[in-house]
Length: 263
Image 1 (cartoon, rainbow, N blue to C red):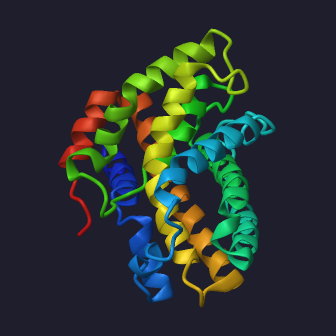
Image 2: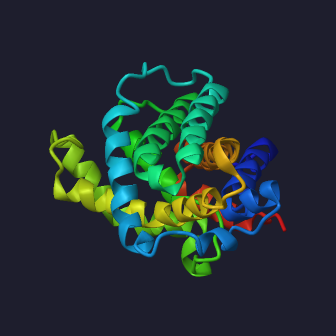
């Protein structure tokens, strides 16, 4: 099937979203302060605990976020309401400081995952599909560029390739009747891989919130930037998946590689 100019434009839009600067650059741009200053204010135990915090947040979000939504592929997404919800939770987190992140993060992650599922549905995905649910969780590994990333492993298709084996195992577990609640090792391993990448973005968010001058208003702003970032990742991801369903994975992957990347 020949690729039309409209398909090229859609895929270029997706690539622009997926290969954009990471959340750290966006936060720095908005608050006017490099978040490296905040990294030094994080507790000494932060690096040891971040894996557990992000994995717990993703597990709790997986249990709650998608399963109350109606499965209507193509229905428009309501991004603004999810942004408001995350802003409120960020305001609370900003008021109580970095100590509140273990309470605030599962709430904001659940809202973000629901928003991601909403975007998936708007791009024609069935949110009752096990593949779609796993693809929604994959979005948290698609954090854009980060100073901590190895360039060979941070590109969109490179991340998908790195996760492919654990996605396959998790999918097989779910189709056999497994659920998040039963905590099967395949699914837990998949979420742990997502959490490892998501943790980089969470650390950057936490570093910004650790800057004393920001307070509750700053926490709300940072969380709004946080969800906006992952909404962009989701939109790009599910545009690519929709085009893959129509034109074939290899065709779209090859075209994606050929398209220019924004400077």
